[in-house]
Image 1 (cartoon, one colour):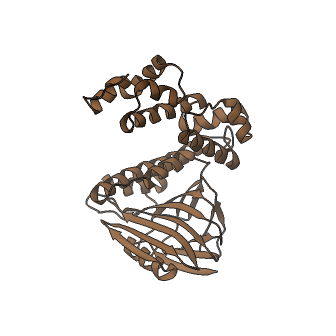
Image 2: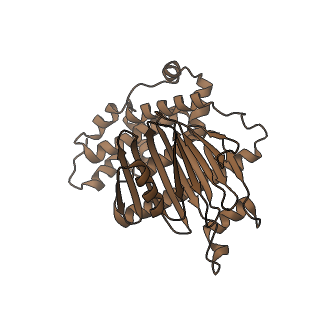
Image 3: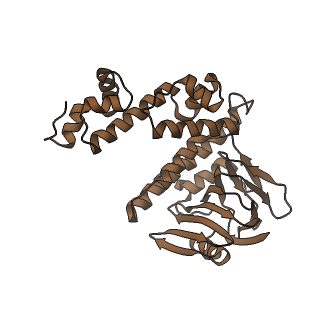
Amino acid sequence: MKTVTINTDKTQSIFEELNKNFGGKVTFDLDEYALEVENSFAVGSIVGATFNDTISYVQFDMTFSVDVRMDILNLKSSPIYFAYCSKGNLVHSFGNKGEEHKLNTFQTAIVTSKHKKDNVLFFEKDKKTVFTLIIVGTEADKDNQIHSLNYKVKETFFEHSMPQDFFYVGSYNLKIAEKIEQLNAITQTGIVRNLLKEGILRIILAMEIQQRADDLVAFDKDANCLTLREMEEIKELSELIKASPEEAFTIKSLSKRSGLSPNKLQEGFKMIHNRTVNDYITHMRVLKAEILIRTSDLNISEIVYCIGFTSRSYFSKIFKQKFNCSPKEYKFNLNPLAVTA
């Protein structure tokens, strides 16, 4: 097993240590670091950045050829770590000999420890692991600390007491996975990229805090929840519909494809998307129609039928509900000279 030690006080020091241990190449752009690795020891990427209110994040997308133990040091303070596993799993302990806690795919964890006590993460060899770690410092500017986000987060979990060893793992949550995908889909550069990332990370942070609040009020944590396998099936179906919304999907065909009952399908889509299965299909078709209106030479009637609708009037109705104008008006606003059928 390879042991890696990092100090989270500064993002720069994190990437210097990772680069020294994993090899690869580090790039830097406006407070965002990226490490790309492709060698006999590891393959993948690690990105991270620091924002206001002593909030930073590090995202791992790595496959190691050996088991890896990562010691996260808390030398100056005891930050609160918000972790989410998008793929694979992680094992955590307080110190090398502490009790082990497992974080599975689609689960969130909130972790902090006593001052100067290590948080240890274990990565299993030959298994792709994707997880996002948001780090909220607990040391704030004394002149403005009661108004800072990190002070509010600390107060939420510990009131006015000193941090103790604390580990919470939440129920499965695919909404956070979708928000992380949105974070990774940002293509802008410079200050725009920085602002967009900070905004989405704050939303993810809020979702993880809300997840814990929801779990605390649930008397039976497993009631009305999906298993990991069911969550994975729902995610795959969601991606399938998103990629090809024009296909003639039905609850029966999706149920047969996934092995999930119609009730489980509805439960999963409502939990993840706040929509029924049919509403989600319709939503994805409308989004694809909007893209075709913007990017293709097809007229409205052609678009209606190529995305799976049979009624132009129905399509126009739901399009207007979403975009506050008819498809024809939308196309005209994009190009006043456009001619639509």
